[in-house]
Image 1: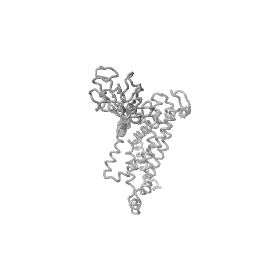
Image 2: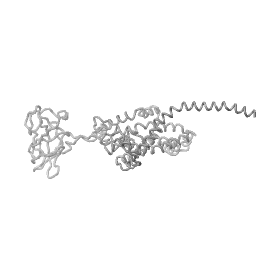
Image 3: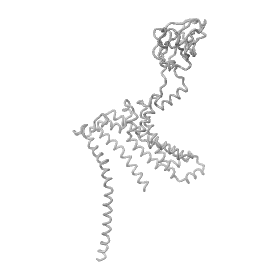
Image 4: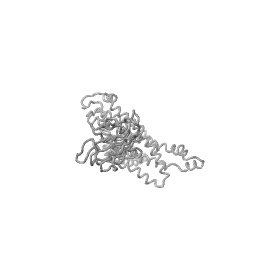
Length: 446
């Protein structure tokens, strides 16, 4: 009995110490639990309850908001876009991260390379969205991507000489805006022809254009139609329309054709003073034509933010931000791979491609899975890039569930019942991926 009482007396201080430790732990954890409850648990519970009420929160509608999600074309489009994001972005990012992680092991400046690729992670989605919104501008003078595209295009394709030029009405030329233009009356070899145009700003004139009067008196011959293409506008507004006046300049670089019976009989390019000669013509009547290529509008590049391209364009911006994250995580897993296995494979004669497919990728499978699932969770919640990059007219074409939820609730829809239902759907889609990731972490910790 005495021994029992002694044991109990010794155990009591230990129990009291354990209780004190538990109370102290609760004191330290309680603020975090309260904050978690206020910022996470309460909003989730409130949103679930709010999703069963109408837009004003006064009338109980049951599952009506969830039925509205299925019936709303804009919401279904947002669900389709979210599916595209979930399928495309994590796969591309995981693949890019794996490729870059393997390649950085082969270069001496791997640290600097990783630093440069990881830098976009330091940029907020707001700033990244603004950067790419400017980069995607269709005007080549503002959008860097279209400036590059137009530069490459113009390097291989000649630009139209005079995209704004139009024929002087009532003075021998006929045709609509943008060409082609042709002479109203037919012309026979041996006769000159003057082709007057307006609508060309002085600063848009080619450098080769001379300030002197164009040479309209090119000598025609029995098999030659000669003439001049010129800017029918003299400084100060002087001169007579339809005639070549002093001070009017020629339009060099224009293609001029002599057409007979629907076929081009001769072609020439105007000289620096605007003069041209169409030679080798048989006797007969011809129409002098200036093809539409002389007046085509300049190439403006790609409309990156059109309805068809806006979602891929935003995904590209997302890749720019998150590629460094995927590369660093996969690189850490790659560094943990036993080098003995790789060296043994090389000793056995395996190629680098075989080592990558049959050793590296299988050993990296747990890391690749974690990276992929983490990115799936992240793309389900993407909001900033979509909202900032997509212009107003194509916003609906680019919407994902997160942006649709915000627009329905606060962006003009003012239907917080439907918005709450969308938030619940988004939560239900994210939770399985989160639970999967948590299980993976626990297994790796065990």
